[in-house]
Image (tube, rainbow, N blue to C red):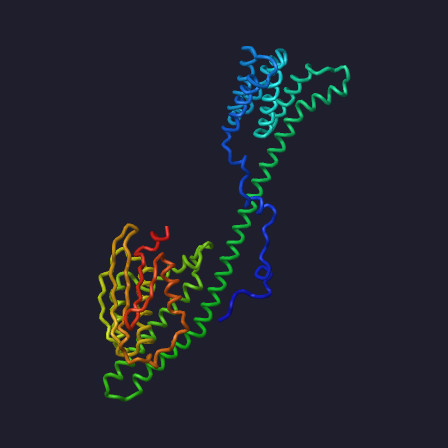
Length: 426
């Protein structure tokens, strides 16, 4: 069967390495980015109290306490009202520089932090008007005996918080762009994977249609001809030919439906995966599941197995995909009995439904005594050891579980399949 991973595809040979933006977005956030903003803002009044009580050289008076705590308190509202906070810091700054040393150290620091946050959060004419106003507030307080030095001092006093705020804003924009590019790269990767899966499914469908379905159709046609050409009065031969013809016709119908699902119809959504396509594959209608199970047991009897079937009525909530899973497990289990125990073996097929905390579950069990002819049926092709693997994958697709173990001289196959695949996958 052709594989869709072509060696000349550079994307298959050399998977793309994540770029700088993807790596930055994938890295865990720095510790300071995970700290709540209010906790960071609370550091301002804490620092003000610590400075006035411990670090200040002289005891602070009521005016110093009021100015320092008012300026620190304004920072608590800076996230929502940065413009108002920056404007309110201006009169506090003018009052602080006219008082003692303690307040003249704290308030300018908090005012600079407010200006930096304003630059970080706002843009446009209002921002630059506030920056010009800050320069106008600071300029009269500078010693202009040396004009060039005075200009440098104004630029340092006002420009430092402006540059800090602009740098933080640029970092925020860079991180957002990195996250968007990483998301876009992830979406592109997902689209490519879905396209590769769709192409693989198309290749499988082509192989099934051109090879397997052709052989099955040939079998059905030849058996149909044999039913009319071979002259025999033995009713058993006629019954076997009829059964083979019906089985081949059923297999051909299932193959065609499977090919249709693998190819995908025009109404498939672009984001559909193989799993969602499988959910649209209703090979077994829930209302017909019980009859299909009894038919599988009857076909096993026709092949020479003594089958006892205990099949409960199908609940109305049975999902089509889950119903198909239950039927395939029963069919595969009975086929394995014929393969490994041989004709004449005794087998029991049990299907019942249990209600649990996670919803209704279909319990399927196929057990054999191992007391058949001691040799596999020569007319049944030996498998390649993929039967259990395929059943396990099918059961896992709907959120169930599968067990296979020795049972006396025979084997026991036990599966639990959720009745509603949509609910189990939610």
